[in-house]
Image (cartoon, rainbow, N blue to C red; front, side, top):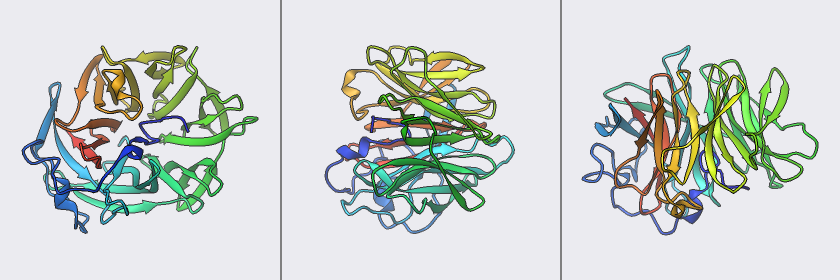
Length: 344
């Protein structure tokens, strides 16, 4: 499977060693609760987190997201948050992602419902398609419909939609296509994702009213759609003819390249209804292939701003709602992966 660093998470495959008691926070990041304090965590509640990072004119309060009690046999806590509902029709905050990694991909998907401001309470629930060996929930809309991807026992990948307690398998119908990945769903039920074409290329698709449509960034060799907002605007990444990786916005039939200024590569991961975009960028080729030293970004009002947790190995911003709440994950020097919610 091609490296897909935002929602098809790959960085954990390089993790070595056991979880130590070294905190990722404390003196390093003000107000971010250390991983050591969660070793025996069993409660769904989280202590309030103080503002600890400033992006542009906004400061954020961070809440760490870790599926309660999950611990791999390797000793690694690993939870990544990759999707958040936009909040166009509801005030509730729902976040989805994956936890419990094997071979660089989550074994389980999850949804957490976050409530409160000064004290944030998280209520977690596993979301697993019964046919999946490895899987991840990738997005949730305001109606509570969840989409994601799973690998079956034969090693093939499929997308799914969970609605009304029922899983529906999603596979693109194009001739010779394989390995469907579903990335996002908006409040109108438009679904977007990617697949492997018969010639080995990686186009993206939309699924609207039962009709599948394939699309690619013009002149690209690979296009991965990551998120769609309620206006039908789509963001993602593409590879140019020389192998360079860029973010993109597809709006009203027009493609726009999203490149963080001076970056070696850029991926766009999420977009809200106001058109604010979040993602990840790398400054040098040292970021390949596992996004060592990657930093998140916010693109709003035509301005790019770095969004990174200080002193951590990598920060990846993946989703943003209409209130500017950002979700994603970071990795510390010990290889521990932790999801986060950043509230302005």
